[in-house]
Length: 253
Figure 1: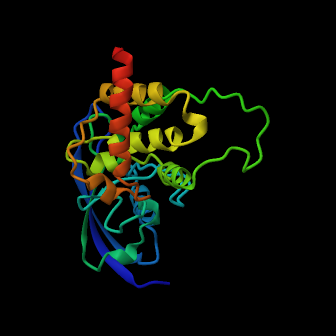
Figure 2 (figure 1 turned 90 degrees about the vertical axis):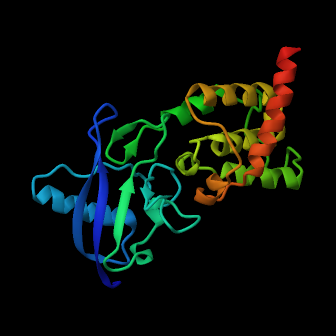
């Protein structure tokens, strides 16, 4: 058991994307510092329900930092103050007795509020869908080493594939850009042999879909990399920009 702390929470409450939202204040006591952030919200919601109130809506699923479902801005930082950590992996020991926590949703026009701090990240799904598929007929699953892949390419593809699509990069970017997310999804396929047949159409269509969803453009602030719980590198953005330029030139030709 950890020590017990008392916190003041200022939580964004909003019924839906059309409603006006506002902050609500909750005083919470006896919060165990061994709790995760989401467990703390569970405790807060249990108290709200005892008073016949409307519990705070938030996204979650695996609570193991894998699925990318959870996410909120805590005191101005996407996923909170612990670097390389999702909100569900953030523990209350990172806060002190008497702290005030301001909790709000990821802010982006492309991420409309569903309710409270839960947002609709369907735009990410549509970007991925725009990338199409891998058309290589592989038949049965090949042996692990049947397709030779250069180690450097495999390492870069593996690092890019670590992206869980949580949207922290969008929330952290002053332009609400999705470039880090899109570049990670482009890179992890375009770097591998299986992804080569569609590499031009993939990057071209995914970037255009990203723009149509209303995300902002990248201005090299690097806030996305700092906020990313999987520490995806901005080098993926530079790679995607080069690939997009080549694809655009081919399309014009």
